[in-house]
Length: 211
Image 1: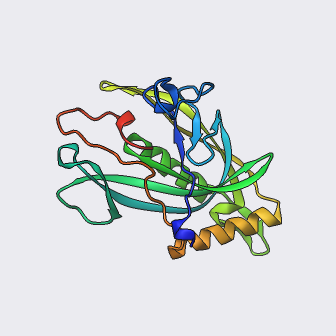
Image 2: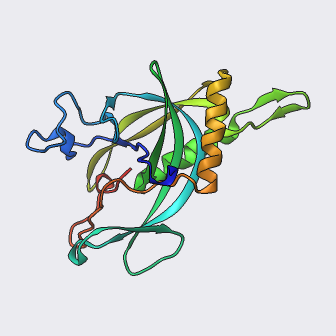
Image 3: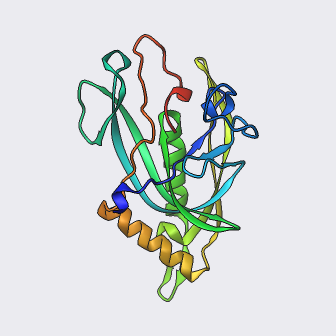
């Protein structure tokens, strides 16, 4: 069942990520802070080319650490637990070896990156028989990389999204459309890969929020 299949998340390695800590089982010798990380293949990248197929804004509920911690649910209602507004971008990763479905989640300061990305998608135009029109989001590629960010509470790496080229491969376009339909129907659902523990007495920084 597609709903039970592990969908890769593309996250950003931060200085505190276990992939950068030699004492952790997840340690990757060649990994560097600021790289993009595939949670399923465990590969790292400086940048990736993606095709966005579906977008969903949800409210992710986490239990506070003093109550055991962990992911509760994704929904549109508030509750007594910690609620994090999270934008999910379902994408197809394009590489020399082929393509792969994945999910990119953006929360906290990264929500403004999500809004900018959505604006870029809506601004894309293609000339058709009846004039210019806005095509489906999967008609164009985008390049994702990272950029260093900071505020008075700390520093971290955030997403950077740049416009790419129009998709010309009919096979990839078809796969993108099929993935979009699966995500929209709920057959494929994005869920956090690991528990997020919220500690109320610890000031949150953007690095504390899963991107």
